[in-house]
Image 1 (cartoon, rainbow, N blue to C red):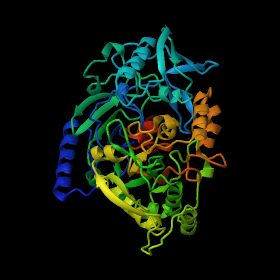
Image 2 (cartoon, rainbow, N blue to C red; image 1 turned 180 degrees about the vertical axis):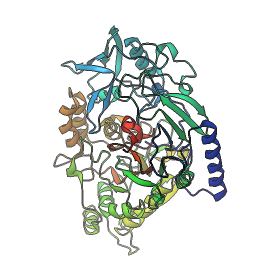
Image 3 (cartoon, rainbow, N blue to C red; image 1 turned 90 degrees about the vertical axis):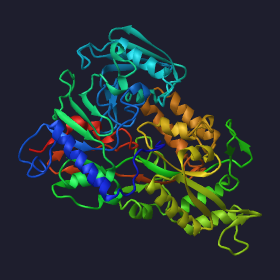
Length: 545
C-alpha cells in the first residue's frame, strides 16, 4: 500500500526541470555512464553495455531486505530462495528444491552450494537463518509473525517452522533477499552486499545510484555491465528522455500520451490498484488510540453496493488515466487467484437506485440526495493531498455516485490525518501485490482496525473461513479455489457482488518511455509501484540485434 511519496505527480516549474536536466548532464559526465543522443538513442547502431534509467525516487531507508527492500520488485543486489517467472509461477532461485510437511507447518529448503556473495564469501544456510531471524526482529513492514523458528539442518538445508499453516509463506521465500551474516551491520542498507546479479558501486544521495554486474553471480549473466539509476521527478524524467539523456523513464499517465523521438512507450499492466475503502460498521466506537470508528451511511450495504454500480470505471480509465489502465473490481484482478465472476456492470444507475430504494433510501425532500429517515446519504471521501491522480479519481467518482443520490464530499488530507480518519471515513487507497496474503490482510476479520489493514472493520465469517482454509492449504495451487470463493461463492463474498466493503476503481498501467533499441523482454503484470518493479526481468534486457 502506498502510504506516501517523496515525489509529487504535479507539474514541476520550468526552472526546476532545467535544474534537474543540468544535474543529469553533470552526473552522467562525471560517471562516464551517459548515453545521450550520441549513444543508442540516435541510431541504435553502436552496441553498449551500459544503461541510464530514471524509474522514480531512491529508497530513503536503503536497500536492506530485512526491512522491506524487494517486496514490490527485484531486490537486484540480493538473491531470494524462490522467485516468480514471467507467468508468475513460483520457481527455484537459490533453492534447488523445497518440501512442505503434511500439516503445512514445516518448509524444508535445499539451497545451492555454488553461490558467493559479491565480496567472495560463500552463501550458506547460516546466512539464510540469519536473514529471516533478523527480519523477524526488525519491527519493519516485513511481517514474519507466522514464523516460529528457522534453523539450519546442514550447510545446504534450512527448515522453517510455522506457528500455523500458511500457504502464502512461499511468497515470503520469493521476496526476501538473503543478506550476508558476516557483513550485515548498521550501514548495510546503504552499502548492500549480496549474491544478486548486480552490486552497488556508487550512491550519490538524492541524485543517482550506479550498479555494476556482479561477476560472481551464479545465474544468467546480465547483458548490461553497468546501470545508472538517476533520481528525478517524473516531469524531469520525461524532459531527460526528450533530451536523449536516459534510456528508460517512468512517467505519469498525463505524459504518456506524448511521443519522443527515438523512444517507444511501454505501458505495463499491473495490479497497482486504486479503490475506495468504505467503513462497514456504524459510528459510535473508537480504536485504541481514541480515533473514531464507523460510519452510519457507509455501514449500510445498500449504499456500498449502489456506489459500486454507479461508478463508471471505464470512464475513469479513459479520462483520469488517459486510457493507461483497466477497470478494477478486486484487489487481485488478473492474478491466478482472482475470481472473474466478481466483474459487475459499470455505471448501472438504474440498478443502483433500485438497490437504494429497496434498502429504504429515498429522496423524500426532492434535493437529489437520498435519505433514510433523518440520515442523509452523505459522507466524506479523503485522499492523500499530494497525489493528483487520486484527487482526480476521487472527484470523478463523487460526480458519478451523485447521480444515484449519494454525496461523497472529497477532501485532501495528509497521511497523518488519514491515519486518524480512515476508520470512520471513506479513503481512496492503493494496494497491489503478487501475493494473496494482501487480500487476507485487507479483508480478514481478525485484522479489523490493524493500522492500514482492514481499516474499514469489515467482517464476514464465511469469507474468513474461506481465507483460513486457503491459508491452511499445503500449496498455492490447493488454495486457489478458496481464495476465489472468498471473493464470491455465488451467494456472498468480499467483492462488489457480495458485501462490497470496497469500491475498486482502476488498475494503473505503469508507463515507461524506452529507447527503441532496448528490448526489455516479456513484461509481467506488475505489483504496486514501489521498488522499480519493471526490473523484475532485468536479466532479459538487451540491445536489439
